[in-house]
Image 1 (cartoon, helix red, strand yellow):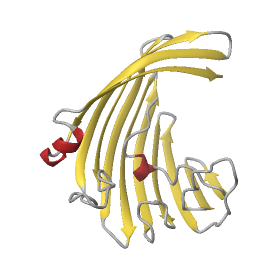
Image 2 (spheres, rainbow, N blue to C red; image 1 turned 45 degrees about the horizontal axis):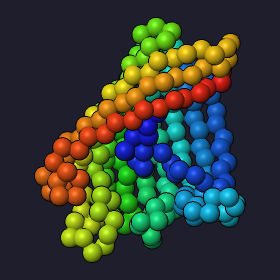
Image 3 (cartoon, one colour; image 1 turned 60 degrees about the horizontal axis):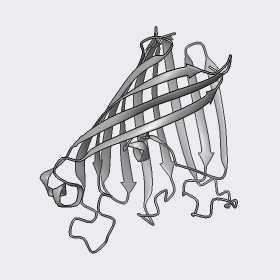
Length: 219
């Protein structure tokens, strides 16, 4: 129910106006390519921004069996981050996915190469275990090198990279409301490992917790 702190490493962009995708699948292999607008839209999300098609991405996926999927992808984004004007990004990612008998898991790695600028990497591992029709346990561990923790340009730590690890565990209880309507109620707890230099701004032992209700249609 919660986006990973490394989502700026694994997604192409939050929201974009203008995407064209083509692909080819044969047997256990699939190839895809896209062109799209790399820059995030402004905060006036009710209007439609200009479609620029100034960025591209490509992905190959291999499914050796019905339980396994492996993918590798790369994309060149034109000035995607408002915090870094004038910087393009090459994002390259690879992941392994497994799903069988109520257990699904993923291990992923990504490198965000700013042009010009430094290369920042991220790791992510997560799993979801359906104990039965009603009870689900899930968890996530991720590690990211981030240089956007101090957005104030006057801060002496502004634009300095720090490696942060997040540990998260959660539970959900599913309530079927009909043949195709489901309600899930649950919560998560999170803890972080970080350098001591972040203590003054983020606390010595930052923790997090969420509660959620999710209504879903279909299976």
